[in-house]
Length: 222
Image 1 (cartoon, rainbow, N blue to C red):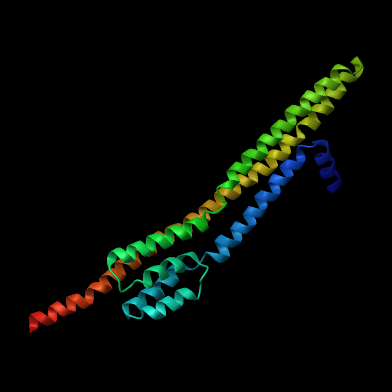
Image 2: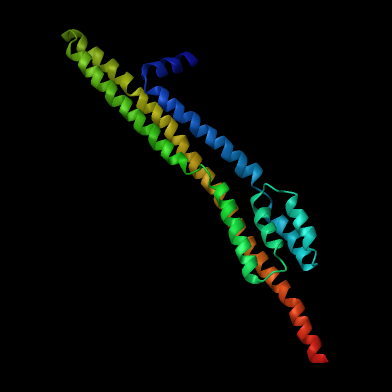
């Protein structure tokens, strides 16, 4: 099998090398992003927010911040922590903190993923270019070949010339699937951030209004 693959690669000519380089870049990005999205940035959002909500309702903001610090690399705790550090500020400051932290986190979530479709296109185009150049060389060689050898040489040359396109597609198709997979994973984390940051904002704003409402009630009784 390895001998067959080596022969296939060698038959494709020099254009197989840049396609192979593109493949290395694609899989390097894929492995790094899979680790980041599933092990670094990911967290059980529902469980985390259930604990945060209990602590906020108990007016234990410091404990909630420490809970976020326990997962410093995860995306959602970083956004939640930004709002908690301004829990005693006004609604506008809480919203601004959430927006600023979200933008920073989203930049990390989407980093390099958008390169995958471009790399897929690059691999495909390199393969086509290799095939076209191979066919030009094949027809040139066939033109000067003996009549009884032309058909055989043309068939062999066409098979060799198409190797680069086949290799380019072999790199491009997985790259597109990896892009869709990673895009879906990052979208899930982004949806969790949008959903739970809004819930936390409403919770902190309601908490900030409670002392005022309590003071007004006390004044009315007096």
